[in-house]
Image (cartoon, rainbow, N blue to C red; front, side, top):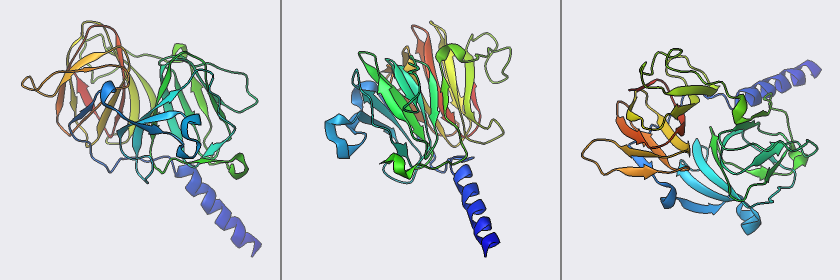
Length: 277
């Protein structure tokens, strides 16, 4: 009987460890644009009302069991009580300074362009220090829930905090899918870069870039982290100015025509390859 219970615990531990390792996203993306000034806002934790950060929907529904992407706004001086989440989430700082770590940890204020990952079940606090603080959060499954630390568990993953100065950027000489003369750079964040598997990267476009991104996979979603760009799906479509926090999705084989007036960083989540020209 003892060995039976050990086997069951081992199986459950394996399920938890693999819960956040989706290889594909079944929800196919479509051609859509959500500008920063046209985002639907609510409370991240409705039970706490205005004591909670605000949350803005980009895609998916964080209250359901599905992948979703959303923005979170924090007031200056915000500091959450210690808590856990039932799911792993990944975040990129868009504005201000944010800290996410164990309650006893010294503050590590992450600036715009920094990346962090908070594993399911891990006890932590989240704090904000800037005048205007906002982050983008990406989850692979839901619902996104806040729970007390008494329910903490170890799912086998570990937290990650990467200041933007520690990101390693690759240029066109290092990556085959970016045109050699584009001066576009990329850094890999999470996932697998095997064919047709889910992954996320940051793409950095120089000021004055004029070109396109062609999506070659069933799922492509992009969020503006810094800078700004002009976007349209065809030359006949109206142009949208996408400021930080804006989002666009693309269906398979769709091309996004983009241009930048200043250096711009995009977070891209895809189920496979795309081409930058």
